[in-house]
Length: 211
Image (cartoon, rainbow, N blue to C red; front, side, top):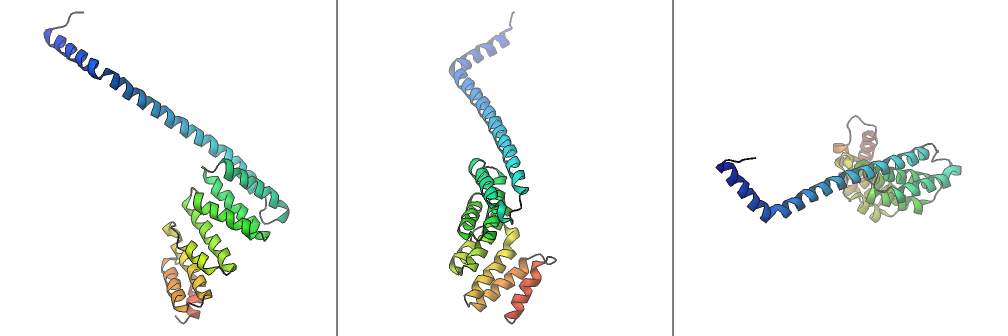
């Protein structure tokens, strides 16, 4: 095939460029292909993990966590999900379910451990916030108010700010810090859903402090 002078010059320039940069170009393309394949493989793996975790979680939901006779099964299935499928949203949910069962069975230490796990590892912001609230609630029941306040000061999604402030008020009130409790309840009233069922309870607490 014959080339005109301009085409021949372009071809010569390309040959020179390819000689200098060809291997780099090949390496770059190869790297992109590897990244693309790796990304797809990771997505596939994550999807398969979620499918398997979902099956375990479905079995967990079939059990009544409040029924003492199901406690060992709830603990076993939850532990399986938390151990093998920690990267899925189901792990945090399983931890909350196990914590509920342990609270019902008065196994508070185990419940707190699972709530702490969910607070640290849950993939869903709402689950993480719920774990912190339940953990703080248990700490208040144990009269460990300093620990409860520390838990309530942890970062959480803003949609739960009202509930966090309300529980903070409870901890402060239990310590006899009425002025600080009052401020916390006021904050809760401002941030709670004005049409929700929780705000009335907070308003009653506030009124009891002489709002």
